[in-house]
Length: 452
Image (tube, rainbow, N blue to C red; front, side, top):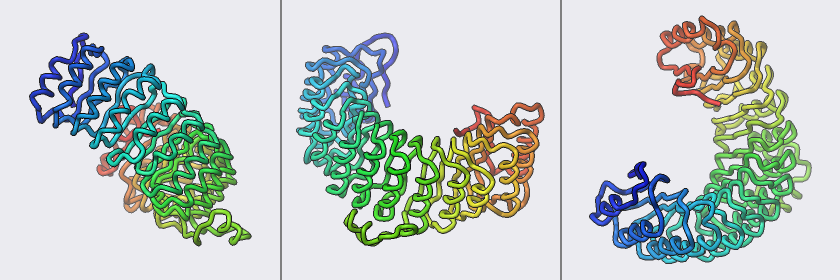
């Protein structure tokens, strides 16, 4: 990748390389310190019209007027090599976006259009939708951190049929927008990744989205962090999970979820019909075939309101699961019973317990589970920020040195605990590393495995 250099110079050196067809210049980042006004944009666009080597153009953070955006749009209409672009700043606005996407509509190679934080409203979305509807090459659309609102999603919905990845983080989307996205999920067999983090979906929006997830046969990742879907929303989503045959990654962190919602997730993982009295009504509501167990590989539940009881139910469900390998419980209340159940889940490979306030008893339980051959397939364990004192952490480090204890463990993250502040801790870590050189023990910010 070529980066702009400091000093306020323009783009003449970059233009020369583009005109010469430099094969090493396939990705270009016009650094913010470069001068990139009307004259510079014009020069770059002229060079890119005939260039066939550049694949990625990144000029985010530069102020652009509708006129300069129009120059870039005209260039895109002629260019036959670019596959990814990110241009302009938060002042680009609806008028600038309209000029830019006029060229996108005529381009036949573009795969990713990144318009994050470009000051776009629902008016600008109308232009984007018109440009990308039916676009044969575009696979990824990033509109994160624009004020789209529910109206913007409504306008965008008809244009989503061919996209594979859609990023709508922080776009002020509520329940009505979620309903539009649910309709899109029903109608497309292409969308694989949907990012909706930091939108006020609330419980109603989560429930609406669940109906679309139920019918999706392409969705692989669903990101709903900080959307406020609560127990009701995640419970409705849990009913849909066994029907979403491709969904493997689910992030519902910071969603105000408690034990009730986690219990329903656990049911979806182990037995999708457990606790449902009227199965006929369930199928009638969602219009689907009989479900199987959810196929989740990764589940992120950090910073919710889950107690040890909820963790226990989840651990028991994972003992019957053959798929859920990566579990993030950071910021929840994990205790003794939950840890015991998780330790018996043979499928578990990665467990994050960052800031779970484990304390002495839970730390001792981890050691006990290790010694009882628990966590036998665990590859990564994050115990950062858990108020673990020196004696308990010493026991953990002693345990992992024993033959046959957590034999698959490759990464142990233990920073941010009082134990790490003691004078002898570095010696304990050094001893454990020497006894088990294949285990990466991270406890300082400079260590490669530091988590949290």
